[in-house]
Length: 160
Picture 1 (cartoon, rainbow, N blue to C red):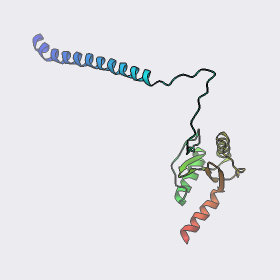
Picture 2 (picture 1 turned 180 degrees about the vertical axis):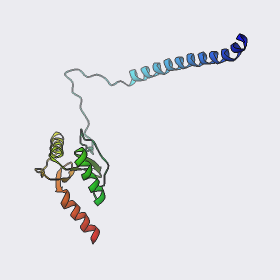
Picture 3 (picture 1 turned 135 degrees about the vertical axis):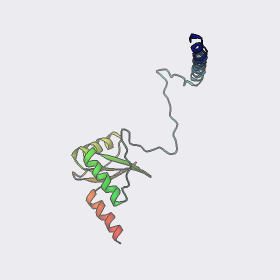
Picture 4 (picture 1 turned 60 degrees about the vertical axis):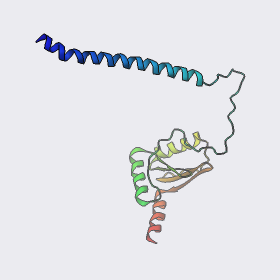
């Protein structure tokens, strides 16, 4: 009985050990290649007297640092209603559009969050209304319209 177990279990154990050793050797080789690549591609360190000069690019990407984005369509009645309901439950809602962002808030906390976000990113804006509001944010500024006015405009477009 012992020899039967040896013939069936022995090859399995032997193959497992060979695979484990091969995996460890391959892992060590990959790590060595990575360290060599990292050493060759590491940027040169600057001294205290030197300055890193960032080249001026033609187009600067516009972003809101620290913003959590949500997908919603502010150009439709249902999308705007969805964003408004989410903002009541979860606070400020921000979505990316072609040339900026759109934000919806339903309460004072969301309004304060949006004001702080605009201030942190140096975006000029008019005083935000203390009502549920849709704010379109562009690099040159932010424009706010109440959610009620936005819904009326959208419903007016649909009925025409």
